[in-house]
Image 1 (cartoon, rainbow, N blue to C red):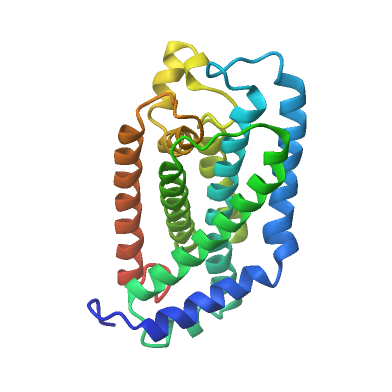
Image 2 (cartoon, rainbow, N blue to C red; image 1 turned 135 degrees about the vertical axis):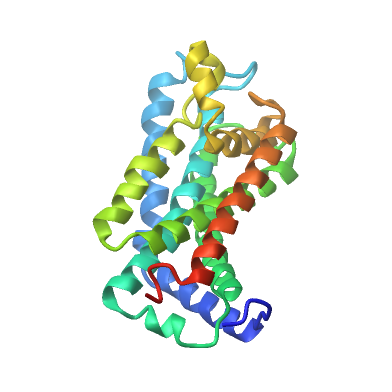
Length: 258
C-alpha cells in the first residue's frame, strides 16, 4: 500500500458508503440524538433558568443551547466511525475496505469526513429545534464553524482509533462510556467552569473537550472562560495528535490486517 498517493475515486467511494450507512438509519443516527438533546434542554432549562447565573446578560437556557449542540456534534462524530469499524470487523466485511488499493490516508479521510458530516447534521438539527426556546446571538460565527469542524474531526478520529483497537462491542462501549462521555459531560456543557472550586477548575483545564465547548460557545456570546485563541491552539494540537495516531495505526494495519 502506497503512503504517497491519494485517489479521489477511492476516497469518494468509501466516503459515500459511510454516508449511506448512517443516512439509511436516520431515525436512530439523527432523529434520536436530536430528541435526547431536546429533553436535556426542557429539563435542565426549566429547573435551572431562574437559579443559575453564568455569563452577565446571558440566561441559562441560552447558555445551555450551544453546549448541547456541541455535545451532540462530538458524541455523534465518535459514534459514526467507531460503530462502523467495529461492525465491519465483527461481521468480517472490513475485508472489502482493505482489499482495494486504498491508501491509509484515503481510508482516514473518508471515515473522518463522514463522521464530521453526521456530527454537523445532528448538531444543526439540535440547534434548529432548541433555538426556539431562547434568544441567541452570533457574536463570532467564524469561531462557531471552526470549533464545530475541529471538534467533529477530533471525535471522528477518536472513533476511528477506538474502532481499530476494540475487538468486541463491549470494548467500544467502554471506550465511549469511560472516556468520551465523562470528558464531554465534564467539559462545561451544563455549567461554567468558573463556578467550580479551584481544584476542579484546574482539572477541567486539563480536559481538551472543555476547550472545544468553550470556544464554540464564545462564537455565540463573545465571552468565554478562556480566550478563544488559546482554545483553538489546544484543540488544533489535539487534532494533530489523534490524527497522527490514527494514521499510524492504519498504516501499520494494527488489528486490521493481522
